[in-house]
Image 1 (cartoon, rainbow, N blue to C red):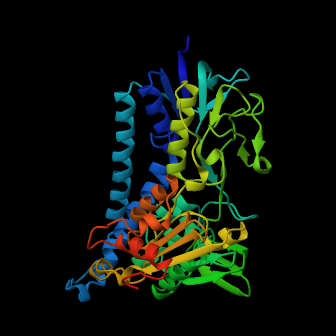
Image 2 (cartoon, rainbow, N blue to C red):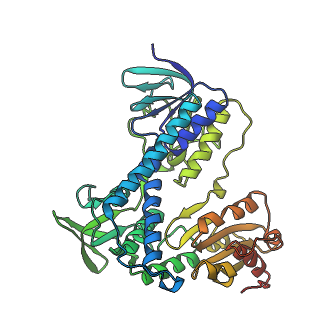
Image 3 (cartoon, rainbow, N blue to C red):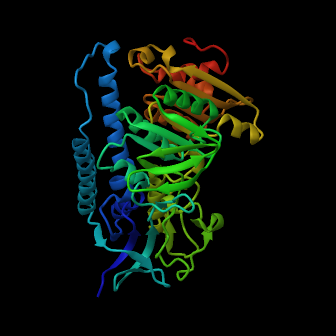
Length: 456
């Protein structure tokens, strides 16, 4: 007889593996169903491999262009095979770490494809495992361009990060976070890059002022950018890919499609288990705690809500198993989920853009500070960085915060905390920040709201 569990999680990615550990910490007998490696797509095929290559691109670029910093190096080159080995080793190390954490917390790993029975239990192969609660955490899959299938020289994002050789020219379709990261890495490696976005700006989810800075930096780094036109007429051969975009045409070694993803619900048995969909059938319908229309099944991560981000999935997983285990908990505040893009320069944001805040009926004030204006900006060569705060004009509440800069993704947490505690720019303007750090740009941005930034 297959075992019974208090909680079974289907999917071992960031949301699933964190949920499993938290459930075990609460004393629940817990299992994870995962058909591939611990850590799921994010750790093995997406976030972590991407950041590993981006780190190499950062070091290579700094070494190659380090003369003005007093670093003169000869014969700087990319060892593509060694880079691939390191990428695989980093993912393997972290995947093994997830397995160790499961073992430490006595979480059972059931290898295979999991699906729901009509009773809300979990079937893997021919075995059915009973559970008091089930958490769906299967993530998402890449969407191709209509009429074009992935394969050969048409890549999804994992295909771009795992190429066996460095291409001479690559086109990236979709200039959101994933596509922009690919473009940023390959351009610094020395590949000719064409970045295409169907909407009117790259990083379309970001504040326009921030996106403009990244676009300017990309162009300076040799990236050709096209906005406002879709990719059409794709012709794939053994050696290249030809296509048109607007009134232009191109031929590249590889075409990477990073235009979107969709919830991975195939084979889960949702309909039979009485689970309703939302968002036009693209997402699973859940309450604020992740509970689906089946009273014992929860869903998290890319399967639910608007954003598809690993850190969102992790926190939703914690909340779901706490709720299922009868522990007092709070829903995830979806408005405070940070966007983090590891391009060069990095982009991080939380809350509303200036345009969104105005469209929502707010009277807003804005504070901006260039990171280069701070001592640390010059020391750490952050020439293009900017902190932008969008605040309520009447009470000073922080409505949105946007950062572009070399360490933007590390800087944003302070602003998330301020918003979570319902703080305003007035508090930020009086908090003493350590010197010399790029975080001082947050201090001056807050002061800039009232026109008294010291280093503006």
